[in-house]
Image 1 (tube, rainbow, N blue to C red):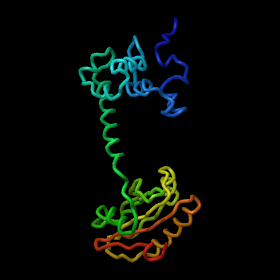
Image 2: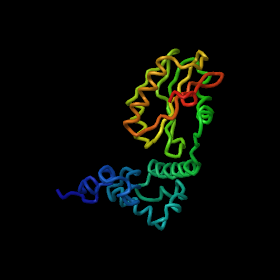
Image 3: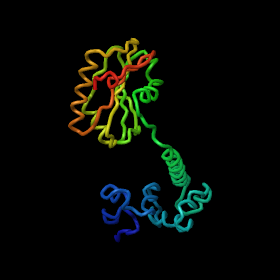
Image 4: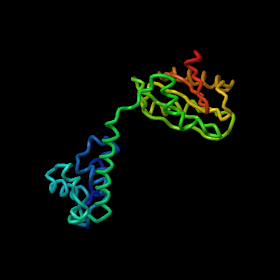
Length: 230
């Protein structure tokens, strides 16, 4: 029996949109191939790439115009059921929100006070200890912040390898470590000092700077950097 060559699974593997994406990255795909990945499948008469091309032709190859199609307009195309239409519409909405958020400048962390103001609302009133990390770029702008651990009332053991691995994945050039003291004491404990030194030394090998380690309490904070301990 002759293969149906219009079916993507019958294409050479290097030309299939998903495999091409994985092998060469998103930039190597045409717009119709990217849309085909979102659609997932076509029909018995046309594959997902051909369906994507129909959509683009109807919109004069204008993605802005395509994003204005209504649910009913999408469903007029053979093979475009409600699920596929909603997927495309959700993609455009996601893109719109991403562009809006990306337009906002990243907050700049220029001092221990700026870092504390940013993170304190999350930690100062907790009855248990949490450890967080701020990842910054070369301009000391905040790329991301994330919680590393949660629980306990006395101390948190730092996973230095995990911290540095995540920093490198985010292309961060510097780090601020933060944890809270539910007891209200701003004084760093022996373990806090030892673990901070371990992180500082390990980060040097990765060309990453540890700018500070903050201890957050309900009544303020302690900065290793301001205290000259880093």
